Image 1 (cartoon, rainbow, N blue to C red):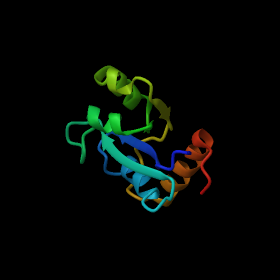
Image 2 (cartoon, rainbow, N blue to C red; image 1 turned 90 degrees about the vertical axis):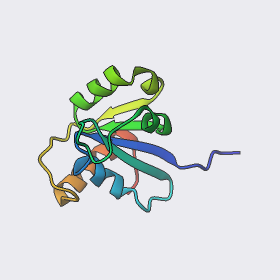
Image 3 (cartoon, rainbow, N blue to C red; image 1 turned 45 degrees about the vertical axis):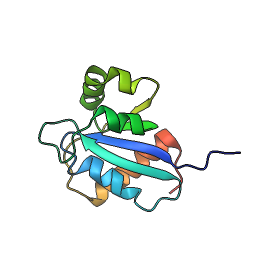
Length: 115
């Protein structure tokens, strides 16, 4: 019997206010993907924990520094997880249309998503 549970994507940026939160919102009503988001910085809206990483099938970071942080801080929780770096700089506001287009383009590139 096929697994019908949604794929679980965790989006990570620095503050969890603009990029990762926008990415999460893109999947609010997606039928086959569940998304959450968190940030790496102490002042993040939601700060990433080992629990977040444990929940996710795939971890998607906006910049290489976020991947480096996760590898250093949570090596065990990250073990066996797919880690994708989108290379999206911190220069967009929440739900910016250019950011949404960039996220869709890069996620399609990496995950083969059909929007």
